[in-house]
Amino acid sequence: MSTPASLLPDGFVPPCTADPESWFATDTATIRKVKAICETCPIHERCRQVGRDGNEWGVWGAETKRGRRGRSRS
Image (cartoon, rainbow, N blue to C red; front, side):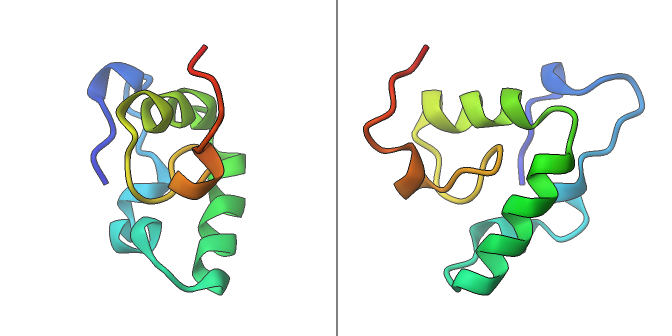
């Protein structure tokens, strides 16, 4: 998963880098698992905005592309 370097605190390694393919899974169980992991990440709100702004596929900031549909880009 590509996380913009400007989002990362110095020395921070986001949990999505350990198994990046999981953040692009299509099965419900894996999606639930990675969403839960995202929620514990200190930058998940910033990642969520990246997903919204770029209309990104996969789980970004504990939201799927489907979950981001119809939400405003504030």
